[in-house]
Image (tube, rainbow, N blue to C red; front, side):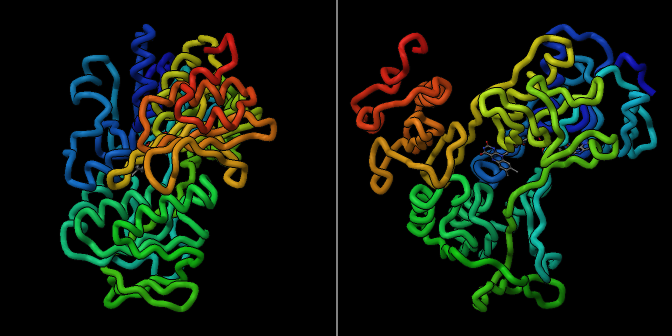
Length: 413
Ligand SMILES: Cc1cc2nc3c(=O)[nH]c(=O)nc-3n(C[C@H](O)[C@H](O)[C@H](O)COP(=O)(O)OP(=O)(O)OC[C@H]3O[C@@H](n4cnc5c(N)ncnc54)[C@H](O)[C@@H]3O)c2cc1C
């Protein structure tokens, strides 16, 4: 058992790796263990559905650190090991190897896992999910042969997989129960932009209908049956219907779990010396005055370091504006904030024609969220507008000739 002055991080993804990096950078020189269930050292997931899946990036593209970084920084990285037990009173974590680790402070960075497709036939061979590098290895190999791919779910992962599959020359059908892809985040008007993008690239996009059953022959997927009775041939079915936070360890330790591990703005759970960050954490957000679980890359990148500083006793109030990005075909997009998908949205530029920025407005005319599509280097002013909370005249917001910085209230520029 490690000595009880150890800091233990469970979950060797981006959030866990960045926390370990920050602990060392901030001068923590005690024992530091990073426990990861996957066979690889920590890596970033965005390339798995983009460059790596497309074949334009190598397998090494996303690793957070060089292989020798962990030893060089005296980080005891345990890969292929799962934490299965947590006794907060005794300050102990049990591993599936049978070993027990004592801790002075524990960080849960256990991330999320794909939601399974709850229909008959979903366990057939040829039904795939995409979360890990191993998943991506397999999918990448699948997409290089001629195939009819049915993507279940028109969310971010589903659409990125559809774009990669089309780029590989596969026939692609996307099935999405909502009226447009990304409907729950972007609403109908901006969801339509992504619908058109995929249809223009030859995707057969079926909206307003769900998958009822996956059909197979000899244990292997053959077709997908939709709610309207139609059957679509399929060599491969890729499911992208969201993720669920990996809270089992937290629950085993009796931590409060409510749509994620509940932590305060300093990423501290109510259980002494236990912290959480990244996809698994439902953290109190001072701006939104509620717990928020953000399942995006930037939240892992910044949340890990914030949790590390909190573990070291530094004052932390994690209040970043949520941010994510996507690349699909030639389109690149960044989204900041938390817009109401059914709220009013105005655009700078024409979404039907080319680069644009969409702004979701709040009841007072303030910017709640901004999405820049093929427009770059505007994240800072977009986020500053959101942070300011001040109403912005729509004529100026939508006028490309007016620099966004000029719309900030005096004093916050
Ligand atoms: C294919 C793909 C593409 C993405 N693209 C984008 C994008 O373009 N933009 C964007 O903003 N976000 C994107 N994301 C989301 C982003 O990758 C996640 O938000 C991020 O990975 C969260 O990091 P994390 O460290 O919190 O969790 P994770 O990355 O899930 O890492 C958690 C790790 O903990 C391990 N673990 C879990 N339980 C245990 C346990 N009990 N013991 C030991 N280890 C455990 C898991 O195996 C995993 O390795 C993408 C995600 C995927 C899957």
